[in-house]
Image 1 (cartoon, rainbow, N blue to C red):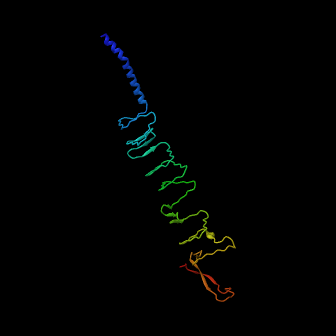
Image 2: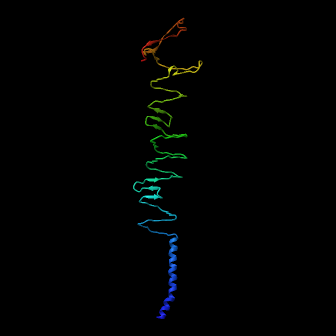
Image 3: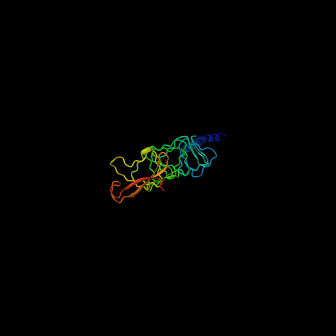
Length: 240
């Protein structure tokens, strides 16, 4: 019995040392990098106090909560955040991008499709439109030729200056008293007005009156002056 006891004590120290070394190796392996070449399936949480680096595709089939202030909903794909979204690259939206608060753009806003504004769209700087501009379907500005067409009124609270030819294909109504239409601004200026028929109204009865050109005289005289001139008279009745 004494010999057996001495044998056990002599073998105990190497066994203890081996166990300690094995435990230290396991602890060191856990705290070092771990590489898993197969799938990992867990029914609980995965907690990482340091960086969780994924070099491949990451698929999340449930909701993603980021510190409680940002959420991606798995059922709808909606993304909600209580903070600022900062992007140094492009932000793409294949559907509607809804923003309930103020949006500030510090650079160019490139819009390849429609831009909808249910309220006021205020632009304090220069706005460049390289395509056609449709205003509610009743007014159009054509990009290829610069033509502007409208089915409504064009109002100018101040001077409306037109440097080119103005062609009006419908009736023209001017209000504003005797100075509503001015063709010249000085006594020496000349201008031409081509009018088929001049129609006016008597101020008391609002009876239509038209200007009538009399026949030209074939001979010179004290009445007509040189030959070829004639009377300009008025007659009742509107232009037809």
